[in-house]
Image 1: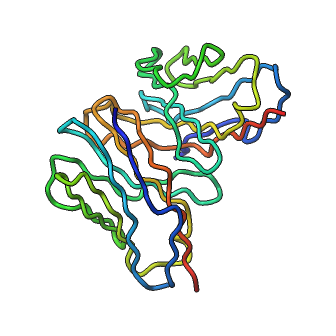
Image 2 (image 1 turned 90 degrees about the horizontal axis):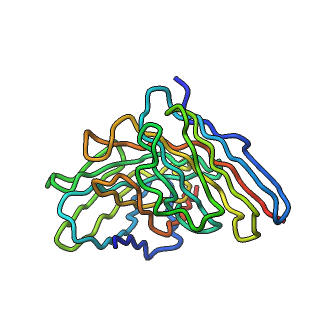
Image 3 (image 1 turned 135 degrees about the vertical axis):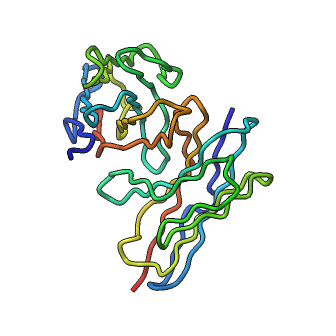
Length: 117
Length: 113
């Protein structure tokens, strides 16, 4: 079956512009996570959705970052007034189970590489 | 706050030999999960092996096994019979009941022919 997909695979934008990054989770997965991976670092948690609602958004760095999942499937990460420091790979992951239940494996997409010039 | 530390930025091993990657973590929780993920240049994060903290037996998946020392908060990965396809970044990660993964800084493993 299809895995987690992310579009676009690469995005180049100019400082100050608005960008949207899309994640299509595995069908039926209720949990969806966004992570940010800077060059040479491990991924850092941004936000977690359970269904349509954000269950934990403690990792969002500031109010320029926002994410939605209106129908409990596809999610969009939105970044306003982009800065050069936002350049990173943005990873999305989905999971069939909720935390604490079952093995809770997270399946990752290939990521979107965002470059802010 | 939970933290994960990988003290080996780079490792190399000859094909067919065994290599061990180190990971330590810090948490005050008693029930949690530990993972090793592999990330090749394609960027795709792939789960290698998983360990539940309440299980005393070390997890094993084919050529991959872990040495889980709960008291020492240590979770090392052993790769036996290393193959060229094992070349990648390896990340150790921690998850509590909240679900979000906390990753270490990664170890870049090179398998040499």
